Image (cartoon, rainbow, N blue to C red):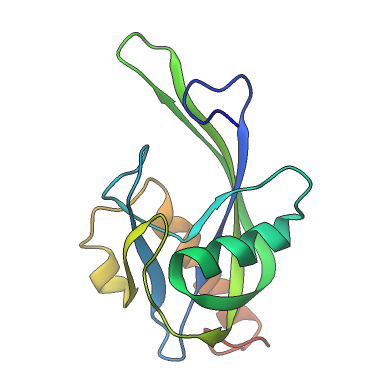
Length: 153
């Protein structure tokens, strides 16, 4: 699948994952289009792959963690134009709340770094567009169902 100058939008998934201290998992992207920005772990859905399986695979590949996907938090489009105003990248992003099951945090694959961060720390990072809003939706959902961040209610 051609990611740069695609023929159609590309579906991608990402996960809002909290640890037991309420810190959110962020990765520093190693590749374009968001190279060096801090983002949620996730990536492109492969042909024939269920969304939940893509999410589990991507988080395991990028961070070494096993997660259980939870509710959908947001659906957005990320359209990036080149200098001639051609569409260089177009992703449809599905952001899910995920629950950490097991594994030790370790950056790999498309992640240059991976960290658990408190929100005040995250706010100081060079973040991808809309990230804070999605994380806050995840926090609010955990609060509304009385669950501790990181744990399934």
